[in-house]
Image (tube, rainbow, N blue to C red; front, side, top):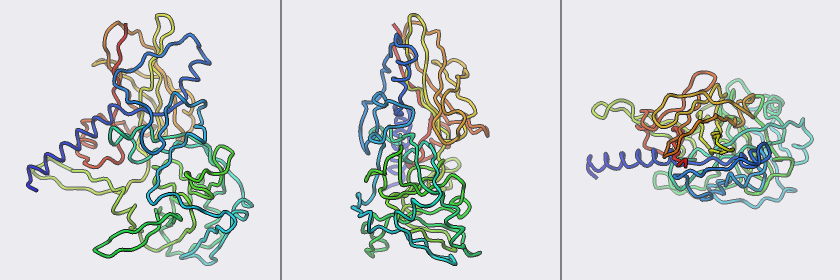
Amino acid sequence: MGSSDRISRREAVRRGGTLAAGIALIPTDLARRLAEVAPQEAVIPWTNAPEPGGRANTLDWQALTSWVTPTEDLFSVGHYGTPEIDAEAWRLEVTGLVERPMTLGLDGIRARPRRSVTCAIECAGNRGFGTFVGAIHNATWTGTPLAPLLAETGVRPEGIEVVFFGADQGTEEIRDVEVVQNFARSMSLEDATADDVLLAYEVNGEPLPAGNGFPLRLVAPGWYGVAHVKWLERIEVRDRRFMGKFMARDYVTLRQEGPDHEATWAETSVGRMNVNSIPAKVVRAGSAYRIHGAAWGDDIGRVEVRIDDGPWRPAQLGQGSDDPHTWTFWQMDWDAEAGTHTVTSRAVSASGEVQPAPDDPVLAQKITYWESNGQVTREIVIE
């Protein structure tokens, strides 16, 4: 393959990622909420919205019935299939650089201090390409905090990395050698012992569905979905960074830094969620219009909306604005005129991080589809 072919492919990926950012749709329950608040409001459809559904059990937002995503509508992504696990025989092993290794059954996990967290979880590939949209949900997870359990094991001073192994496994070829590997991801000890990191055995008050990690999964609010290891069976403390497939070879973002003639390339492992937002719908009540949307990925400081090529205007933040790990609903009144219009939103985190435009170098020079959080532009016709 010549250099011109590589450039053409790179540009094709870039354009594809930009297109996907423009047509993605987040599942929410805004339709029901709008109907409850103002039944006379009519939804005006976008002219460039994708059809609902698609891969990985992605959700049709119009079908949801509450701010918390119903359990049956949770998206699920697997890499080695869904393992069949006998809850009675299942055990969690906590091992590695610890003074007191542990082995716990599900009853032992359930007997530990109980805690619930509500958080939005987004697949790292969500909106990376046009056929994969809506891979995000907002649910309430219940389990036991990980930090006290690790403290009880007595992590040794040299332990710096916590690796989470799932029961799902597959054959991988590494340097012409075939090996059987379990799905695994890791975090630094500091990240793994954050107060809100849970070993979860329930979602929305129900036992975990098989596709969402039964009988136990990791829940790490603020991190992309790949970090929330499902079907958890082993936690291991190590003295060096873990470089498994899903940390160092897959779920790696490749980004060009600098112009083509002096480019360097950065590879980073997918980690924390990026600040994100989307205009979800426009509704009409009489002669008035209102834009509704959602923002997520960080502590949302504000959301701004631009109509056509006009100035950015502030939106009003609603439910979820007091929690950095859930999605935040927002709205903005619009004195719309007849004709074809575009509606674009951008979220700004409390720390000042701005959701980038599709042509921002942070996105335009990224040639992998992971972590696609570009501003979304919707098209609409007002009659």
